[in-house]
Every structure is written in structure tokens, then in C-alpha cells.
Image (cartoon, rainbow, N blue to C red; front, side, top):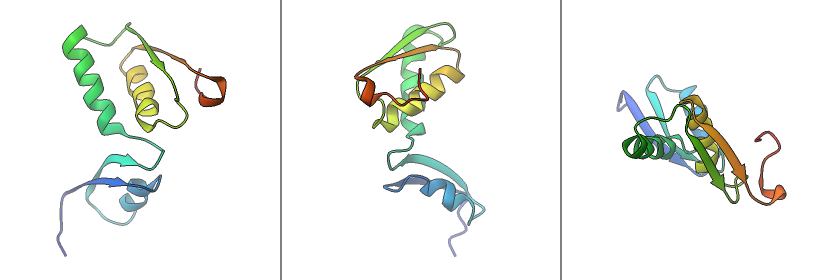
Amino acid sequence: AMKVDMVVMRHSASGAPHFLSKHIPAAIVNAGDGTNEHPTQALLDAFSIRERLGHLKGKKVAILGDIMHSRVALSNIYLLKKMGAEVMVSGPPTLIPKHIQ
């Protein structure tokens, strides 16, 4: 009924933006979904880092703490690597996902 071109969606359920994208023709911006991802925060963080350091390619970034339960950390790892940064994580082994090195 509203025929919007874009939806900015923040939802408590992981995967909700992906689900919505299958049911409406509008572009979906994921503003955080459950414990899954928070790509808009990662974009803001990358922007701030670039403002300070100039670029991300070749930069070494350490993310510390509870990586497993941080959707922001997971999104930052993905985006920073995509932009050429070397990302290292450190924290208790039980709080680092097995697929993150």
C-alpha cells in the first residue's frame, strides 16, 4: 500500500531483513538483526577509521572481547577484511566463533 523504495529495518530476529527482502520489491537496509549482523554500524565504524587513518588496506585491526555474541564485531570483521584490513581477534576461546581466526 505504501510502495516504498527502501526499508531500513532493525529487528530482534536474526535473518529478518533477508526474509523481508523475499517478500517485497523494495531495497532493504539491515540496521541490525538479532545476534546475526549489524552492517550499518560496521559502515559507520569503517568510515570513522578511514577519516582517522586515510584508508584501510594493509591496516592491522585488533578486535577484543566477546566476538561470538557481538553482531557489530562480526560485521566489522567482514567489512574491514573486505576493505583490505588485516583483522585479528582475541578473547576467551569460548567467546570466539570457530570460523573466525
